[in-house]
Length: 221
Image (cartoon, rainbow, N blue to C red; front, side, top):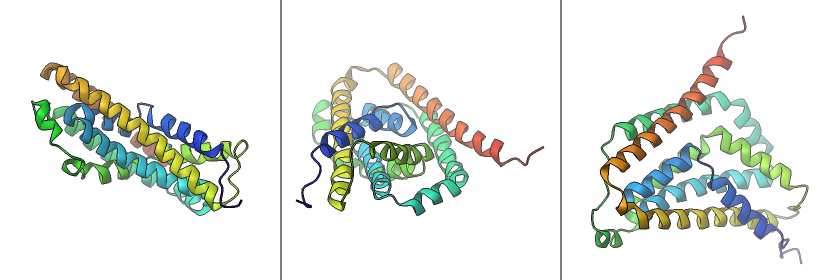
């Protein structure tokens, strides 16, 4: 029986995975923009990087790795500095980049594959694990659900992490597919507006992280 996980773990994990993927945070917003510009596989590649990052954080949180949690808190400002700078750079690039579709023909899109956009996976993975909000948020979530769903074995832990990643995968497949269907109805004006909104949002998120580092890093008066 020790090899059979708690049956509540899978639905709870799926819900958590979907919930952490839906908010329009900086990384999720970037993934959605990739889907608009590059279609289903571009959005899914970016989403895979995010869910792998969330999966790694969830695994550490579910295992109760206090050393990692403590290290994140101890080096939080360094993590924020790196993450903030990367977000600002990506946001500025996105804002000033001319909008384009990977192909103007839906038939050409059908020939695309995940391999064409594989380099987006490590990019969004890095952004996810350097986002202190995502790290501390998942640790808080797993601390809270411990009162309702007990993770009493490694089987429970791995099942929960797999369910969280499964929920995130369901979301990114659904969102990328929906955007991939409607993206060809957008003209260059709409694409430019989307790029600029997404770019400004990323710069704003990055600036918030950097401003917190600057304010809390100042010596007391």
